[in-house]
Picture 1 (cartoon, rainbow, N blue to C red):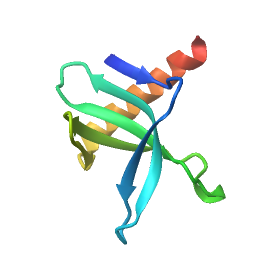
Picture 2 (picture 1 turned 180 degrees about the horizontal axis):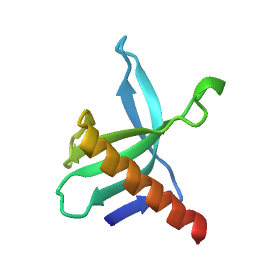
Picture 3 (picture 1 turned 90 degrees about the vertical axis):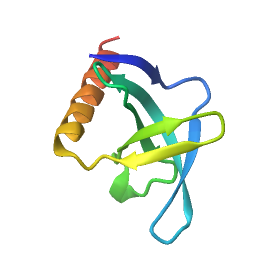
Amino acid sequence: MAKDQNLLEDEPEIIYIPDDDGNEEEFEVIMKFEVDGSDAKYMMVVPMEATEDDTDEVYAFRYEEDEDDLKLYIIEDEDEWQIVEETFNTLVAELDGE
């Protein structure tokens, strides 16, 4: 189903995403993957400073990356979101089974 998955490594990958007020918030990348049949790349992130309200909050983004820049895109298409969610759940289930 998915290829080129990067799962938690020894040292966490940290990215910074601006909030609505322009303040950069720190997130840990917990997974990167591609969906078969697509060139799109996806990443799942969690806030580094989670409050009790969002302890289970995982955010998904489509991304493009080159040597100097990381661009994140919000997944707005319902069909694309379902594919990403299904792939993420499958990968997590595979990890739990190992």
